[in-house]
Length: 159
View 1 (cartoon, one colour):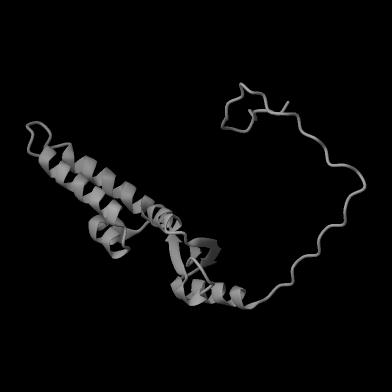
View 2 (cartoon, rainbow, N blue to C red; view 1 turned 90 degrees about the vertical axis):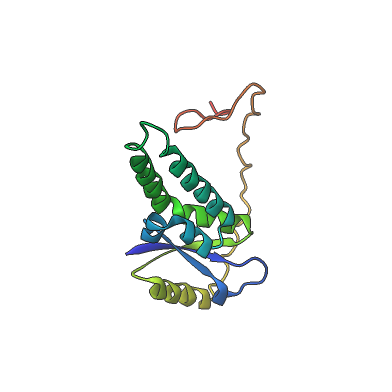
């Protein structure tokens, strides 16, 4: 089963215009990345791929680089095959498409059925929690010299 990330168009909810992006390796983006990006209207990415292809062909003309250029080209194509869905999702986010969620399905049609079936069911809104009698805990103010940190153990402003 594959995972499909579903994007809804900006503005009013139109489930029939939703876009399904399969997460995983894309063979066409590996074999012909320039045309794959053009097909999905990723103009900037297509231009960058074209520039990389021209640069690699120019690099092949340099003495001593004939053996390494095919390896670099293969690595670039592999990277594009794996990252093509992420680049397409980033382009949709830039165009203000809303990410609806993820559906696991065997194919595009099954993903559409699952999305539309979930879209049709109207679930009642959950009831709000009653107000608590105890006050909410206060957090300590952030230190002025704290910098953002990545990882599981270093959280600025927390002791």
